[in-house]
Length: 280
Image (cartoon, rainbow, N blue to C red; front, side, top):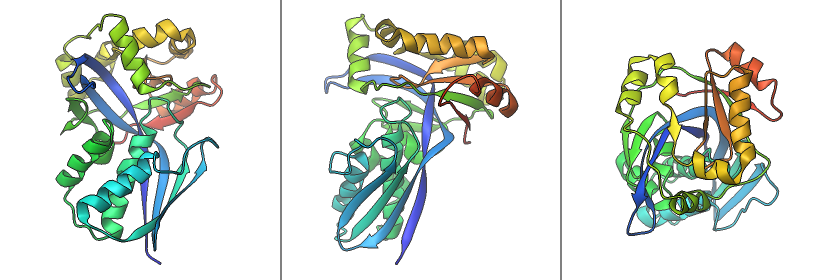
C-alpha cells in the first residue's frame, strides 16, 4: 500500500498589519509568516474512500467535512478530477485555535501529499491558488518557508530571515480568528507602521535591531479582552526573551531568544511551553 507523509509546520507572524475590511467581509492584511519546527504529521495512504483519523490534540477535534484537512482533500479531488480515496492520518501536536496556523498547515500538507499520492501533477503555483480557496493561511503554510503575505493571505512572496529560536506558550483557551478581527473592527481598527525597515533588517540578518519592530495589530483588541495573554507576553520578557509577540489571532504568545540554550531556559519557567526554531 502506497503512502505519502508530510510534516505540517506551525507558523509565527513576525508582524501582522491589518489594513481594513474588504467587500467580501475578510480583512486586507500584510504579514511576514515564518514556519517553525513545531509540527503535526500527515500520512496519506491509498484507500477506496476518503477518511480522516486524528490522534493527539483535543478529543473534540472534528474528523468530519469541517476539518480543513478534509476540505483540502475534496478541493484537490474536484480540481484534479481524481476519483481515488485516501486514509488520512493526522497526528496533532500544534495547539488548536491558538493562532499558530495548525489547521491551515494540515490542509497544506494534505494538498501536497495527495498531489503526489494521486499523481495529480498540479504545479506548486496551482496548489497555492487552490490553497487560497481553502483558507487565508493555507498558501503561506503550503510554501513552507518564510513569506510575505498580502490581500487576505492569498498573495505570497519569499522572504529572508535569520535563524531564530522561539519559546511558544499556548493558553488553556481558544480564540476564534473571526472574533479577533471583529474586536479589531470594534476598537476602530488601528493599523501598525510600514514594515519595510523590519523586513530589511531581518533580510540582512540584523536580528537584534529588528526585534523592537515586531508587532501584531490584533494584540490590543485581544489583550483588552484576555488580560492573561498580555501577562504571558510580559512574563516572557521578564524571563529573558529578547522580544515577544502574540501569534496570529492568539492566544498563543511566542518569545524570541538568542540561542537554543536560552530558549530552553526561558521555556522551563512556563508549563506546556514548546521550544522551536524557524525553518528557512
